[in-house]
Structures are given as C-alpha cells and as structure tokens.
Image (cartoon, rainbow, N blue to C red; front, side, top):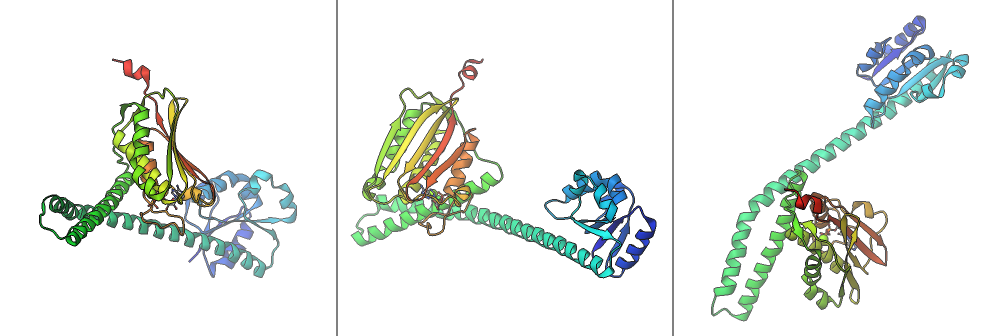
Length: 363
Ligand SMILES: Nc1ncnc2c1ncn2[C@@H]1O[C@H](COP(=O)(O)OP(=O)(O)O)[C@@H](O)[C@H]1O
Ligand SMILES: [Mg+2]
C-alpha cells in the first residue's frame, strides 16, 4: 500500500484529508523535519508547513534521487502568491483549496503513478547491474579454468610442430591451424582475465624510465607484415629529442598493439596508419591515426566501454581491447581519448608521464 505523509499546520484540514485518503493509502501525520525521515511515497504539505520545513523537504527529495519523491502543496488562493521561488523548488504539484474530492484524488493518483514508474526504473537498473555482475563472475571463473587446458594445447602444438617428423603437408597444415586457433583463444582469455582484474582495480604495471623513440619504432614494426598484406601504409612520425618517459614497456606494447590492430581492422586497402609521438607539458602524447571508416559521434562515448562494439563492426574481437588499453594508460597516470569523423578516419591518443628529473635525483 502506498504511504502518504501529511504535513499540515491546519488541524481541521489534516483530519479531513487523512479521512479521505485513509481508504486507499496508509496515512502518516507529521509536524517536524524529523517526520520526513519516514518511508513514504508522497508528501502533502500546506503553505505554512512548507514555509517552516521547505529546506528539510528539499533535502529529503534530494536524498531520494534519482527516484522521484513527489510533494503536493495544498494552499489557498492568496497563499499561492506568498510562496517564494526557493520554496517552489521543493514542490511538484499544487492544489488550490478548497478542492473537490475527485480532483484531489486525481492529482494524487498522477503523482503516485510517476513515483511508481520511477521505482520500477530503479528496479530494472538494479536487475541489470546484478546481471552484469553475474556475467563478469562467470566469465572470470570460466576464463581462469580454461587457461590451463588451453596452455596444454598450445605447448603440445608447438612441441609437435617443432619435432614431429614424417607428417604429410596436410597434417602439418591441420596442426598449424589448431595451434593458431588455440593462440587466438588464449589471447581472448588473457583479455577476459585482464578485464576482471581491471574491474577489481588490479591493473599491474611496472613503469620504469624508458626512451620514447624505440617504443614507437617497435610499435610501427609490430603489425608491419599485416599492413603490407592489406596494402596499408604505416608511417612513423617522431619529434626530435623526445624526453624519456615512465612506462612499462610490455604494457605500452599491448596498448599500441590494440590501437594499431584496430586501425588495421577498420582501414580499407590503400589507407594509411600514422603513429606519432610529441612532447606536451609534462607528458609525451602518442597517437595512432587511420584513414578508415571512422566512428559515429553517438558511438564515441562508448568505444572505451568493455564488450562494446559498433554495430556492423564485429570483425572478430570481443570489444575489450580499448577498455584494457585505457586502464593500462590510467595505471601509468596517463589519459586516453579518441577523435573521429565518419568516412575520414579516427585518431586515438594517449599520454604517458615524462620521467620526473627531480624525483630521479632524490636520494
Ligand atoms: N580505429 C578504429 N576505427 C573505427 N572504429 C574503431 C576503431 N577502433 C575501435 N573502433 C570501434 O570500437 C570498438 C571497440 O574496440 P576494441 O575495444 O578494440 O574491441 P574489438 O577490437 O575487439 O572490437 C570496435 O569494435 C569498433 O566498433
Ligand atoms: Mg580491438
């Protein structure tokens, strides 16, 4: 049953209203700010009570947010003019007394309907959050348990490829395919484990002073053979005299691998991928640009969400690369963002801190 709190200074009105509402609702009667702490679905207040209690009413409404807690003001015609702008902010609906009973009932029903919609929305949001948590737990358990048997397939495959003699070419090709597929599965599982570690706030990075140039050169070489096979040019643009940065080499390679991998995936033949590095304040800003399909403006806020992929872009992958990359960069104290225009291409940026000389020389 819905609960209605009456905050009315006028005793007679209070009795009348309480009597009228008690048939369909549970009626609570209050006079002080403390009475607002109770659980209720609608508050009916008169001008004088609101004058005294409007700050308390406002606080109570704010505490309930984002759920809607309606407040209905019942006041006489002259009373309406007395109410200040501040006080209006805590009111959702007004009835001018004296009022006909059917109108009162209708106003209350309308407000309670909005309240119940708002509660239903919260329940849906909670259900969705619970489903996501369960999905993540299951994924973490499954990935963890798949790791060992899969490693067995991988090492067994490598061993056979290196040592098996007298294999027919077709047998060898089959073996290679099994090995490659196991490698793909392994990478996916690594990503899933990484994402669950990330969710738990455990992104492990071990930043050390590193020169920036080799990092970029290695990144450009990383997928050079794939680029060549796809007829895509990779260009490497470095500012002279880049300062050293604090970076975990393997982790930065992982970030570049994801960005360049995406650029290759979403750029058609004849396109260009540019990898750049330039100093900017206390950081070095790295970027990977492509001349590919680009990302729609409404999709841009989502690209770093885990498991997110643009519609029609499911060209392999699980939508984890960018989420992982951004958390790796954040664990370095850097930032990652994207600029893109449909049909023109995308540029992903990330920053890594320069080596702080003052810290280095400190004993
Ligand atoms: N360079 C790019 N050009 C166009 N779209 C991109 C690019 N990089 C990422 N995206 C979009 O962002 C999504 C998420 O990327 P990512 O997290 O790396 O996952 P995945 O590569 O597994 O799809 C991609 O599926 C794609 O829709
Ligand atoms: Mg990717």
